Image 1 (tube, rainbow, N blue to C red):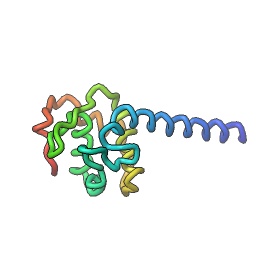
Image 2: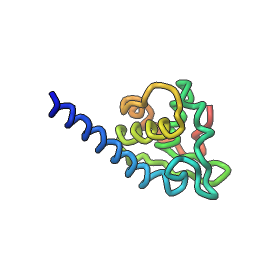
Image 3: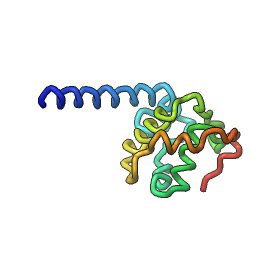
Image 4: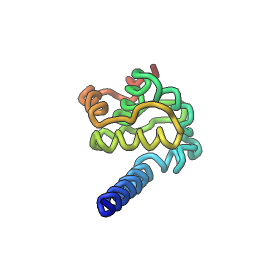
Length: 125
């Protein structure tokens, strides 16, 4: 029993470190380690309300997959990421912002794939 708990603890630690490395490679260069923003790119605190509604959650998935054209310029999409990676990134952002709501799942991300959207087509709900 102790061995199983020990393994679960380290598996959780490895996953947490993995998402931080993924965040560092894909998001932190523009949005910062804690989603605070790096000039001229915005912090992500304004995304907080989107975690609470189905339309908002869909929007967040679309932004990560397809990108978004905004005031600070063009955010690239990360369509090449696996569904699990996109879900983990969004859950990491949710944790950073201390947003309420259900965790994102790979299935939720998969539903938004294949739409062939451009960043201009991704609109806020």
